[in-house]
Structure formats: C-alpha cells, structure tokens
Length: 239
Ligand SMILES: C[S@@+](CC[C@H](N)C(=O)[O-])C[C@H]1O[C@@H](n2cnc3c(N)ncnc32)[C@H](O)[C@@H]1O
Image (cartoon, rainbow, N blue to C red; front, side):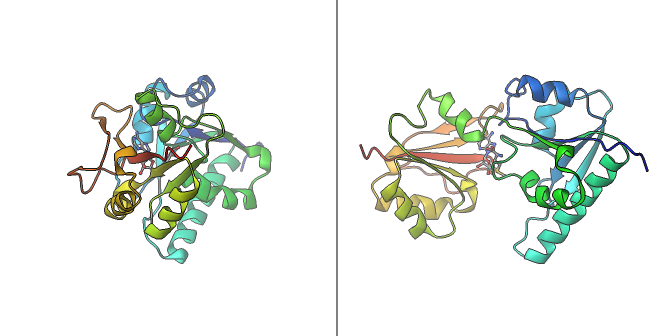
C-alpha cells in the first residue's frame, strides 16, 4: 500500500454539451489516473462519460460503480458503502480519480450518496468537489428565460411522490424546477391543471444533447411519459 493518498475529484460535467464543463473540470479530467462513473441496471452506459469523453486521457481506465435503483434502504446503503470502499482503495494506492456526475456534482447526484462513506475512511482533503452547470440552468438558457429575477423564489424538486406537496409549493413559490419528471409526469400535470399553471410549464428533454426537445405550454400536451433526461420549469407569475 502506498503512503501517499490520491485525490478524488467529484466532477460535474454539465447537462450535455462537452463545452459546458468548467476549465478546471476539463483540466482535471485530462490529468487523473482513473475515472468512476455511475451505472444502474436500467442505464448501462454513462451519459456523463459520453460528455466527459473529449476531455479524458486516451485509453484511461473507466470503472462503473453500481447504484441500484431500488427503494430498499439496506440494498442502497450497502451499495453506496461498497462503492466508497472501491474508491478509497484506489486513492490509498496513491492514484487520483474523477467521479463523473451529470450536471452539478452535488445536485441529486450519486456522488452525494457516497460522500458520507468516503468521509469515514479518507481525510477531508482527499476529496475535492468541482461543481457543474445544472440541467435546469441549461434549460432556462435554451429559451433565454430568467430562472429568477428580483425578489422571486425558486424551488428545485426531484420527482413528485405526493401531488399535494407540489400543490402547496406552487402556492408559495414563484418558480419551480422539477427534475426526474418521467417518474410522475401524470401526477404533475394533474396538479398543474388544477392550479391553472399548465400553460406556464415548459418541458425540456435532453437539453444540450443532439436529440433535445422543448415543449412550451403543456395545457394540451399529448406527452404521457417523457424520457429520463427531462425536467420541467413552471413559472408561477404570482407577482
Ligand atoms: C440524477 S438527476 C441529476 C441532476 C444533475 N446533477 C443536475 O445538476 O442537473 C437526473 C435528472 O436530471 C435532469 N437532467 C439531467 N440532465 C438533463 C438534460 N440534459 N436534459 C434534461 N434533463 C436533465 C433530469 O430531470 C433527470 O431525470
């Protein structure tokens, strides 16, 4: 075992365009010894890896970490712990690594799940987070629409388990960005219609990627199940 501990860089690669990484992220990607990506049984290739591709050293070792998409707490925590152990083993051998995340590294990311387990076994300076442009920032920029102005508020959500919670939030906040809309699109649409806000909602799928789709005014939409890479921004116009 080497004396020197390598560094793990949790890198946000942005939402799709390989030119939308920070200069720092691009430099580090070209320097690290190994790359970790997240794979789940339903998603056997990493979109983050595709985005980071142009910045990686040719022939670099890429390791997929398994993040099961299940509700069972014990299965999840044992996978996160095992992933943290695998990462720590690499760092303790003196090698540096990047953990790729789509969008921003600390926004609804798999990296966020392993961080507490890494902290149990590594000194704090061994882990460095490099933020990235989030999917909802990219979405807003596609239509040149401010996310928030003046005294407005913005709520970020990931999916909607309980439509009533969304309803309550819509009463209180000026703008809502809902990620992982694919999970609960129907529930979301029903609540937006109930609140008279469906026409103020825009659905963004695969923003920054070649097959991007943007649908404004969802009042009469025929979409029932958008792709995984979809989010919605709802403007409340309360002011
Ligand atoms: C696990 S979360 C990752 C969020 C990401 N860390 C961020 O900063 O945006 C995955 C969700 O992000 C959203 N997302 C990520 N990239 C996207 C893209 N290019 N287009 C639309 N939505 C995207 C989708 O809502 C997707 O279901």
